[in-house]
Each structure stands twice: as structure tokens, then as C-alpha cells.
Length: 475
Image (cartoon, rainbow, N blue to C red; front, side):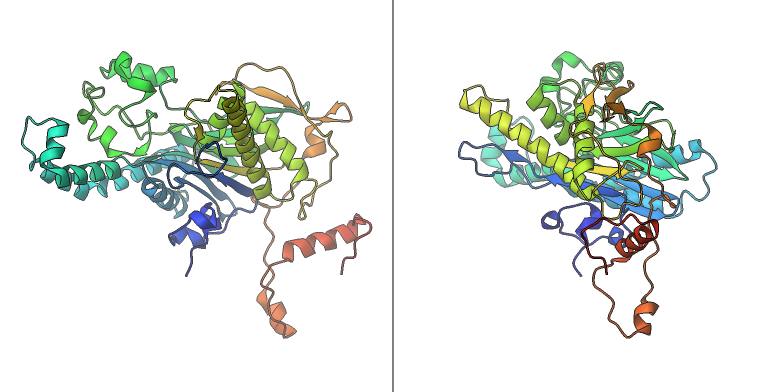
């Protein structure tokens, strides 16, 4: 049986494995968009630097629990694929049943990250043993060049093993449980929550922490381990940029092999997640955006903006007004950023002012809607709200994970209030009960391949409310 790649949150052409998570229901109030990495060429033809390494997951486990994750792999996709499977298993197989407090749920999240890390590292044991055996075949005192000249097969095998041992991934996970939002992350994939205040002003709050060398807390931690930050070349830790990740044995158990990392008194790169404070989900919470760094860094690089979180939120707001599905919203935002980055690079290239690298990374964006209106949604049960074509941004400070930047949405020159834009839902994911097959059996009809139950229910509701659009025949 072919895997249901949409349940994994992976484009069909990029999915290659069947997963137990394929049988879990996708959250209908979420959607994902993707773009593969690209090296820009003068002739405009596509050229990818490596296979797609992102993974994402958006599942509704039961009426009270949903899980959303984005993983940004490096040096291959195996760590991201492993993390996706294991993270779902650590959080959706009954572990939350005994949680009595927010602190309990947060601890379960922390343990899930640590369990994923431990389990993945255990899969590396055979590779580490094989590497150790191969190293003994090369006499001490040889330079890298001499070793390759005399033992090419051994060196090539060692390089191959090191690449596998280097495979790791960032992770950002958002858990909705009992109408509360819990967020945890390692690495630089981000979580942004967009919520309104009583005046209808949309605020963008970063719920994740970027674990890299621009993070002063992480820099201080590394300094306390005995590392000289002046010797860290190109803002990298060994073979990666992040100060925390899942996997990547080489910068953890094998960190002594890196000259810049070897002085550390303990492993410098951690898998321990940053846990954000619990957020009760009320009418002010509008939508959540989870993304790999390829999205915000591409926009940041192209625009030079220090307010990229707000710009991404504004792009999403624009697409909410014109798209009919959440997948359409997420993909349209990704496509817009890709086009901005590409056009900026090609314009500068034509002037001889090239952007550094001339490429962009893999991009994944997952959007979870709580109650933000989608006027063009075919299944929208809430009131339709008319918006000005272009929302405007109020003055706000430079983006900061702890700051609340503001985006004002205007309707006829009046700020949209929470009361005007909130749509109601009866369950945590707003899902309707699927139509029973017994009804089809009763009149001897073959069940439709496509389930139109949501559409039909909304048509009937609109008939009762006398709100059907004019000029369309509804049977």
C-alpha cells in the first residue's frame, strides 16, 4: 500500500515510506506548504543542492488533543523521519491521560524530545562501532592526504559513515491539549502565534527560541563549557549552525573530533528542548504558524528586514482572505516568499551584486487555524467579513521572541474587533461526524469516493439561515 504522504505533511513526490502515522486523522483546521531547496542559475533552470530534508506532521488524535510538528533535517532526512515517527508515538499513545497539570504536560513534552534523541542515538551504535574498527586500520601519524593515498577504500568508507553520523534535525512541536497550547523546540525552526487584543489588533508572538550563535544565552552556555567563541568559524558548531538539535552524533558523542569543540568539558550541542509557557486558547488566539528556517531566512535575506515575523503574519493574513483552504494559505505564503527571494537574487545578479551563496534552503510552513475567518472557504460556517484589500502594519519594535509586534487589520477604516472576526466551532478541530455507510446501504447506492458531508451540511445550514449565495443552483 502506498503511503498517505499528505498525513505526514510531505509532498507526494517526496514521500517514500509507509508510516503508522498515516492512519491518524489529519487535523482539518491545518494545512502545510512546501518548497524544495534551489541553487540559482543564470539560465533559470532548477537545480537542487540536496534531496528535500524537511518533514512535518499535523494530526488530530482525539477531541481534546492535536499535535503539529516541523522538522528541518540536515545531512539527510533519516533523523527528521525518525523524529516524526517517534515524537508522535511519545505524545499520542496515552501518555497525556494521566497529566493533571500544565507542568505535567510540559514534562511529557520534554521527555518526548529526550526519548527521541536517546532512541535515535541508539540506532547509531553499529555505525560508531564500524567507524572505530576502520580507524584502527589506518596507522597513526598520517596526514589526511597520506591516509587517502594509502588507504582510499577505508577513508571513503569513513567519510560515508561520518555523513550518516552527522544526520540531525531541528524540531518545533505544538501540542493542543484540553484547549491549551504547549510549544517546545530545539534548533531554529519557529513557532509564531497570531492573536488579537480587544481592539482588534493582531499581535505576533514568537513562541520558540532560535538555538544558534546569535542567541546570547546559548553563547554564554558554550562559554561556560570552555569554548572559545572566537575560534568558532563561520558561526558554526562543528558541522552545523544550531546549538541544539536532535541527532547528529558527531557534534555530540563525537565532538572531540572537532578542533573548535574539543576543549568543551561536556557535549556542547544539546537535545534538551525550550518549553514555552502554556497558552490558554481563547477567542484572541487566531492562528499558529510553524516553519523551518528556510522560510523566514529567505524573506529576511531578500528584504533585509528585521521584522520578518510580522511580514510573514501579514502574508498569511492576506492569503486567508483569498484562499479557500488552509493548505492553499500555507502554500501561497511559501510561494510568495520563494518568488520574492528568487526575484531579488536575479535582479541583483543582473547588476553584478550577488546575494551570498545564490541559493535557498528547503521550506516548510504549517498553519493551524483557531478561529481566523476565511471568507472564501467552502466549509466556513461563520459570518463572512469584508476586509480592505491590503491590511496595514502599525509601528512596532524590532522582532524579538518576547515582544508583541502588532498588525492592524482594517475594515472600512475601522479596526476589526474580536467579536466581528471570531468563528465558532463545536469541537477542538471543528470536525463534523462522517456520514455513516449505513445510509448508503439503505438505498443501495455505492458510497462516494469523495466525502461531501461537510459541504452538504453547510449548504443545509445556509438554507435554514437563508444565506445561500445567489446565482448558484444547490441540489
